[in-house]
Length: 308
Image (cartoon, rainbow, N blue to C red; front, side, top):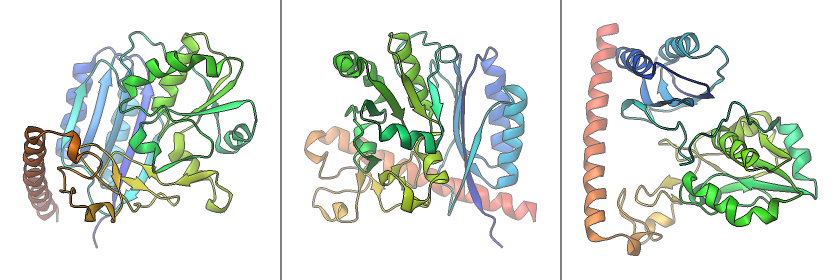
């Protein structure tokens, strides 16, 4: 019987001093247990999304809880196949890139709202609901009446706040993102900037969908995720979208029928915006990904044979 494959996602804003040692220990465990995905380590904390069989992921969980903090929430999702092809543990300046130095997320934290509390805030007239995600995420799913900053990357968010700060004065601000990490950092940034009455959806959209019946939900559409699933529906199953890896847009089946669509290279939204040189680069990336997938499948096959 084929073993199920799971995805574990986790993050924690916490001071990490010996980053190199932690990086080595995690990567060694990932390589010896066929765990694929990316984990980022920085002075401000740790952030990861990985996939493997459940017993392998539990080993990684134990290591991180022991070496980083016992107070880290791991979210588990099942999937039909391995969504990642590489094993990466990187040391970065930030675990989620905002580009603003010295944000003390541990000190300045907005109040968390559980899904039921979140729904009450959404219905209040004095609440401004802010989607801290990027445009290509917001356009396939969002909470009703939420404001999207229309950013291409999270690092554009501080400039958007500065430009629109008058819209938040004397308002209750309720923020959300996919899994919680971006709205947690964004809310800390706003508090440091002097804003009051800042709240955030605990665990993000994914936690809301997990705990809310579809018939009672205030969520519209699907939720963009950063793996091969591209999007998940309200049941947290793989959604209907695929992704243009050139511009990151989520595409429907109809979008792939466009004369501008080339898998991994272009779509109708970006074909005229990229140069021929860029398209050649995208084409080479598709080739390299295909090679990496074949090598990964071969490696996993040998691993399974040896373990029988």
